Length: 194
Image 1 (cartoon, helix red, strand yellow):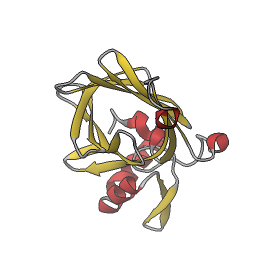
Image 2 (cartoon, helix red, strand yellow; image 1 turned 180 degrees about the vertical axis):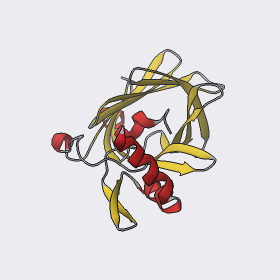
Image 3 (cartoon, helix red, strand yellow; image 1 turned 120 degrees about the vertical axis):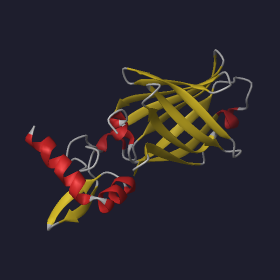
Image 4 (tube, helix red, strand yellow; image 1 turned 30 degrees about the vertical axis):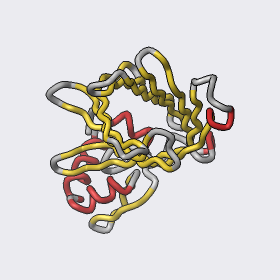
């Protein structure tokens, strides 16, 4: 969970605009709109950030994890054609550079700030697309407010335990909280005392 905490910035639904870098493609084929909904997945045997793409040009879904042994990020994607692709790599500042297993493709995720992130795809040294993602409402949403009791992200919903309300950032955190509220309340209270 700690290695993925920067992804708290993306836990919500995003509006994305993509652009193919192929100048030979027709103009109406070079640009597209998609949405991506990111959630936490907090299971005993797996901690991940999941993504569901709507109208995605490349992906239907994905899951970002961290391999503790190899000290690398792993993005496992399902393409729009139903093929599974696994990308592995590292983080430098707010940029995650991941290379396709047994391939030349590269994905980069750049987390800019609370209301914008970018991702791009390259085949070898040739950049094939850029995708810019913004929050619905753009700059209207602020990065201040209640924090998620599970991950520390921006709290957008509520859960209750022993008569007290706590905030959660996504359905994945709600599921994890409901399975073990004592654990997350204790962790949250300890962080509040620091």
